[in-house]
Amino acid sequence: MKLCISLDLPSAEENLALVKEIKDFDVWLKVGFRSYIRDGKSFLEDLKAINPNFKIFLDLKLYDIPNTMADAAEEISSFGLVDMFNVHASAGINAMQTVMDRIKNIPNRPLVLAVTALTSFDNASFLAVYNESISTKATQFAKDTFSSGVDGVVCSAFESLDIKKNTSNNFITLCPGIRPFGEDAGDQKRVADIPFAKENSVDFIVVGRPIYQDKNPKEVVKKILENI
Image 1 (cartoon, rainbow, N blue to C red):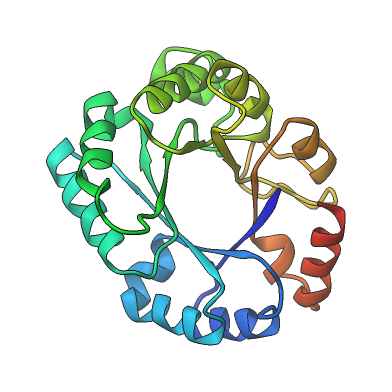
Image 2 (cartoon, rainbow, N blue to C red):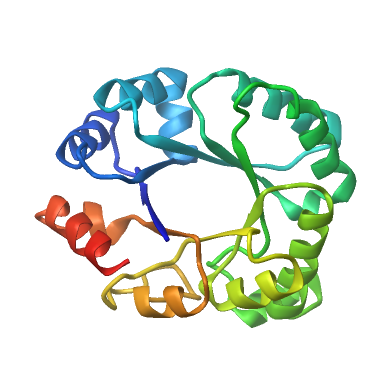
C-alpha cells in the first residue's frame, strides 16, 4: 500500500513548504483542482525539483466527450511530469477506451484511474443522482473501467475488495477519505482508517488534512508509513 498526500493548501508556497518537509519519504503527491488551476504546470516542475523521485497524481477527474477527454489526457501524458491521472467512469466505456487508445504509445505513459463514486456521497445522496446504490454502481463502473483497459479506479475503501473480486487483484484501487488514526471526517461521508484499508486490499490511500493540518506533518507521515 502506498501513501498519496493531498496538496490542498491555500498557496503554492505552503504546499511547497510541506513537500520540503517530507522530501525524504517514499510518497506520492496529489495535485487537485485548486492547486493546478492556481499554480499550473510549473507547480509540478517545482515538486519534481524538490525530489525527482516524487510520484505525482494529477487529480483533475476528466469528464467530457471522448475526443476532448483524450486530447486532455494526451497533453497530461506528454508533460513528462505526471505519473498518474484520472477520469470519470461515468463518462462511459467509449470515452475511457478513447483515452487509453490515445496515450497507449506515449513512452512511460501515466497510470490512469477512473472515479467511481466520490467519497463525499452517502447512499441517499448517491441514489438521488444515479438511481442505484453506491455498492452496485461502483462495482459496475469498475467493471466498465477494467474492460476499457484503464489501470484502476478511485473508490472508497468500502468498495475496494468487492471491486477487485469483480475485476482483478492487480486492478488498482486508490481510496480518498482516509483518516489514518480516526481523525474527524470533515466533509467526507465514507471514511476509513489504515487497518480497514489494509483488510480491503487498498493499493493507495489518500491523506490530506490529517497531515497538513497537524503541527508536525513530518511525524504524521512517518507514523502512517510505519503503519502501512
